[in-house]
Amino acid sequence: MRRIRRVAEEAVAAAAAGDAAAYERAATELAARNPEQVGLVLGGVVRMLLEEGHPDGLDSDDLQVVLKRCAGDALGWFPELDPTVLVLLLTAALGVHPSEEEAPPVEPAAMARHAPLLVADLLAVTGRPLADYLDAALAEIFIVQTMELP
Image (cartoon, rainbow, N blue to C red; front, side):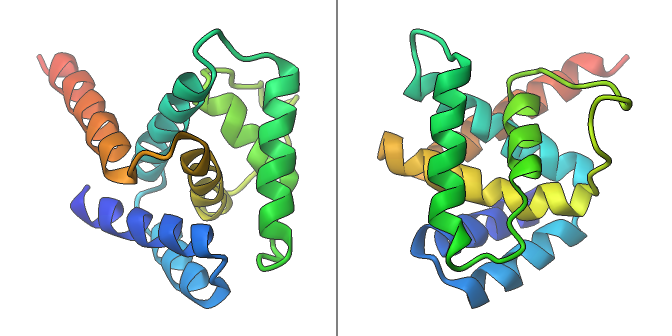
């Protein structure tokens, strides 16, 4: 998990700076990690950021604003941007998982390559450091994994 944390920090920093070369390196390394673990960590961070940024709850208009802002910021330097992946990341972070028939198949690597874009975008709104959210997400994962042990 430490390596995922380090690479996630690099990818989010590169996304925030719009540094395509640094993002490519970090996102490629992140996508090569365990997709389930990357999804748990970054999905938890996205969820927390959405909850903090919208304490009264989210509606479809809020999600559309996030999607447009994130995609608009990244399109100029991340040509592989796939808005469908961003939508799936947003909904998954909120616990909404479409059935296999409803959702287009998306490679876990594509999810890992797009998640730092959402994190960087949402961090810009909260103004808090990524480390706070990573600490909280990792703590939640630890608690859940500990509770699942026999």
